[in-house]
Image (cartoon, rainbow, N blue to C red; front, side, top):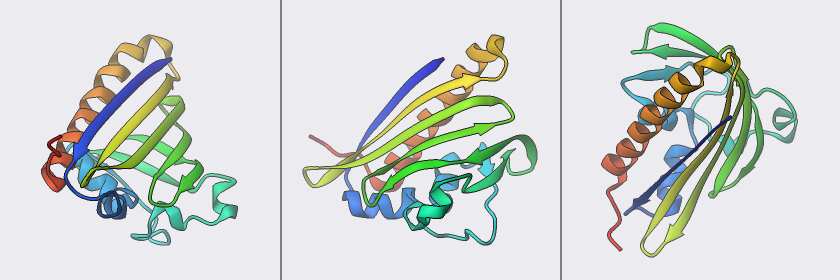
Length: 157
């Protein structure tokens, strides 16, 4: 198992940050330019918190992950255990490459800004790929948090 944790202090309010990071357009903005996740047109630009209780019981949708917007490298079956409106989500997904992908994101008010945290617990399907998985996911989430700071500004304590 791989355990990773990322944290950013942002100068924007939690409501403003949540409005962006709770959409797949926001996720793709964070991942740009390295990875793009396809999204079915039926899901559109809706917030994750708009998922119905029925949708939360199963796979919300399948997403093809594309390197540099055009090279497919994985298919992610997105499953949300819960979405806390304005606060975060608990994802428990699988993919061709990951036997288990647990991702907990929280957006918490802090002074005049907020703190975004991502906790990941990953089990690759092929055990010997764990070091590569750790390196790639760490790179992508550090990149995502840099993009968050670029977009919303860094909160100064």
